[in-house]
Length: 134
Image 1 (cartoon, rainbow, N blue to C red):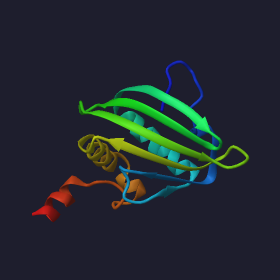
Image 2 (image 1 turned 45 degrees about the vertical axis):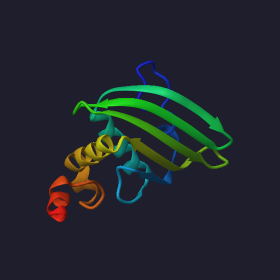
Image 3 (image 1 turned 180 degrees about the horizontal axis):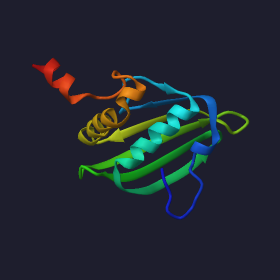
Image 4 (image 1 turned 30 degrees about the vertical axis):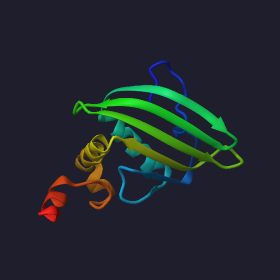
């Protein structure tokens, strides 16, 4: 989540070295502070707009919700659960995206931007999945 008002990002500054990211646009978890920062940066380039709708915490779990419009024109809703340890470091982030068409589009676009960097099996690849469906 980015902020035009200069607010602190809700989790990027506090990532543990071995943090894990799971999400509906990923085929498997991604680990490591630098990898997650890179993915969040890549996702941000695919948004035409982004509007935070909720951010709150219960104990060590923080919940982030936002709406976005992808550069492709699809509207997207996201919910993130940010799990912190007792020191405040983020140990796990789980992101869900809806509706399905927007989530698949986001994953496919990420494949084009950082697919090679993270390995070809991490994101939805339309060309592979079209062939598999035939």
